[in-house]
Length: 505
Ligand SMILES: Cc1cc2nc3c(=O)[nH]c(=O)nc-3n(C[C@H](O)[C@H](O)[C@H](O)COP(=O)(O)OP(=O)(O)OC[C@H]3O[C@@H](n4cnc5c(N)ncnc54)[C@H](O)[C@@H]3O)c2cc1C
Ligand SMILES: *[C@@H]1O[C@H](CO)[C@@H](O)[C@H](O)[C@H]1NC(C)=O
Ligand SMILES: *[C@@H]1O[C@H](CO)[C@@H](O)[C@H](O)[C@H]1NC(C)=O
Ligand SMILES: *[C@@H]1O[C@H](CO)[C@@H](O)[C@H](O)[C@H]1NC(C)=O
Image (cartoon, rainbow, N blue to C red; front, side, top):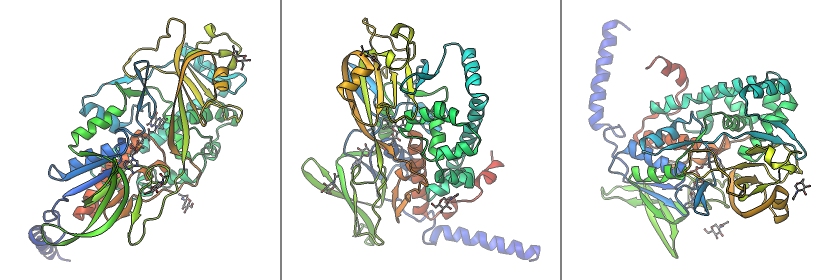
């Protein structure tokens, strides 16, 4: 094509674009914003989704947020003798940028998670024990495991480095239509492959020894996901990042992020349990018949419903947890059977029986967190001293030497078990969770787009369940809903984003 012809084509194109912005159907300027959006679930996923939806769709759209329990969901505190403690999601990584941003923008404060000494028990003895001397820890680690801890640190850094690309993509408004596409854009086939292999296989392939994995890595995974090294490699990496230094929490409780996001999003909280969602044709004020979603929910003894242009589901979809039915969809929306693992958190105020972990007496014990190796005889995954959500300093024992401890276990602890762990205790209070997915690679992720304008956030938990993962899924779903509503297909599933954005500042 000659230069002149090329110029004519491009100026024609310009004219067409100009005209198009007035008259073309489906173009940005003409697409009216949605009237009403529903978000189901007011955990960190749902409340951050409402916040991002407000940013994208503007001030006029009405956003309803449905919650059948407490705002916060799996972020919750428990009050014991007038003090509040984190009972669900408790620590946040220093590089969890969405969570960091929320805390800053919403005017909340942080507390550093207290760094007491950690030991690892195999049920008989301590296989590893931290010292309060940094240099001794280094010598101990090298003595026991050579340079594997350092190599492991580098392996996690590498995964984290790629993972951080998501913030750049999202700050440029790019969205992904599936969890697989999102992961692929971050770390290519390597990342996707991590969902297909167990954490054990992944690390053995990378050359780590069985002793190191058994004594250092498996215990961390038992603490963070209550599961063995048979979880997928990606969640394993997230779990290890959760053992980094610099972990923090929100002063007053992590759930405050959710209630503040809800406020800031100016959405309308509806206390009710969503029973089903049905696609129906409605005639709007404009007179045009429109396909809409009817959300039917129960509040008290009443059944009510509302019609929405867009719906975001921000709770795990399965019978035991959300129990939401999709009626009359064509094609039908499949039922999900993601199985969530039960974890019991028990708060015990008492004096630890340190001899059940080591041969030393309590006054010389000195550890404040004990992790466990993968051993079927053990009835707890971990136990550690906790401080209230309002305290920024190290926990102090009561006058008789008792601390407040938190254990995680797969089952409710019996009185007999408690008396093995403690010389005596004042109280033991439990909180039971359907905590996170039961990981069993190859882990296939549920879709994000369930139907035309119906989105699902919690599929991302198949890769890894964490507050930040839900916030990332929420940001993605809000962007995806916005771009699909406005026909901006160029903002969805772009290949090679990393290379494209590298040159941009
Ligand atoms: C014990 C434990 C420890 C954890 N530790 C950490 C940690 O240290 N760091 C970390 O980052 N993550 C941690 N996590 C994971 C983290 O808490 C979750 O990944 C995250 O909170 C999930 O948020 P969500 O909003 O996606 O889901 P949820 O918090 O589960 O929110 C879903 C909400 O939807 C509501 N709902 C469900 N069905 C319906 C319905 N039909 N109608 C109306 N409402 C409905 C529920 O009541 C709930 O409030 C932990 C989790 C547990 C359980
Ligand atoms: C992962 O396994 C699935 C089958 O379960 C396969 O379709 C997919 O190609 C695999 N992905 C990678 C990157 O290995
Ligand atoms: C799920 O909801 C249906 C009604 O919508 C109800 O009959 C059933 O008992 C519920 N199941 C659970 C596990 O809550
Ligand atoms: C402490 O634990 C040890 C080992 O499990 C047990 O033998 C001992 O009886 C316990 N002590 C008390 C006082 O319960």
